[in-house]
Amino acid sequence: QNTAVRVTQKAVRGASNTSGALPAKINLAVALRARAEFHVQLQNDTAAEDDLQMASELADAASDADLRSQLQMRIHEVRGQALLRRNPLKAAEELTEAIQLAENQHSTYRAVLHFKRAEARRNAKDPAADDDLAAALLIIRTEAKGLVEKGPRGEYEKLWDPYFSRFQSMQQQMIENRIQSGDLDGAFVYAETARALEPMQILLHAHEAPAGFRPIESKADLRRVLTDIPDD
Image 1 (cartoon, rainbow, N blue to C red):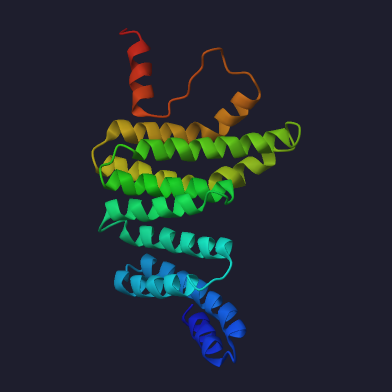
Image 2 (tube, rainbow, N blue to C red):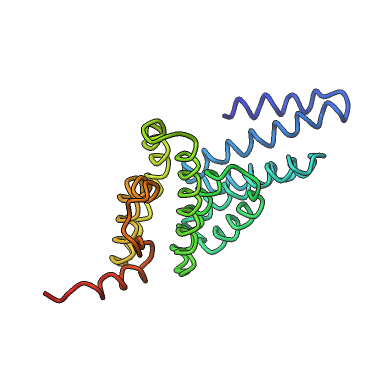
């Protein structure tokens, strides 16, 4: 990724006019943001922020408003990820900016952003984390429903595993975070949601669920179910 940054920096310096420099600057913004992601993974927070700051300044030069929003959206996402450990409250704010800019983006990407903000809010002890989890699951279910409606049962089921596997690592991390923080009820809800999501979609869209059925999606749902269980 360092090579990509050097090549695009050279292209910016070598541009002979403004019209040629602008595309090069956009490419450099993308390369810097991508390198910042590597810095975040390596916990090089200062280097990540330096890259993100330069990327943000370059992105503001984009003449197309949609392109500018997309560039800033990804920058806010990476900055939120960088802040997750040391300042989860600020991380949630950055991810909120990304979510707002992602309004017209693909639904899967929006679900990922909500999962990430849920983690940030959990780390900040913000109860709104459950709202993000619910929002992410609603997006997933809506997209899954679209898969079902595109073809008869049997044709779409081959898409389930690759679709739902995209979110498994995020859900597992959230479960581990709940256990480590001592929130065993929250960990149980997350675990049940992750384990049941795929088969539950098949059940619900097959219209075979019993009347009045409600899935467990929050600790309030868990308390409701436990209250209905007979003592014996």
